[in-house]
Amino acid sequence: MLKAKESGRDGQTKTLQSTFEPLKFEELREARQRHLVHDPSTPVET
Image 1: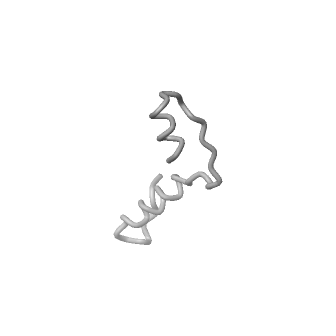
Image 2: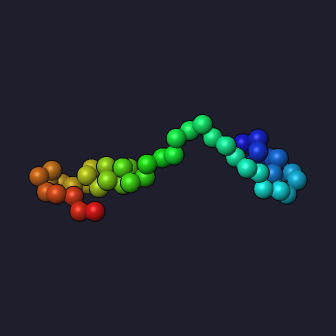
């Protein structure tokens, strides 16, 4: 957040470094699809 404010003040792009692991969107998408299946015995298409 501080880098974003600093970037806005001086108009320059700032490099960000994070200690968080990247999100795994594929796993989230598959979990969401399984949640929408009405019959759990039906395979989920990808």
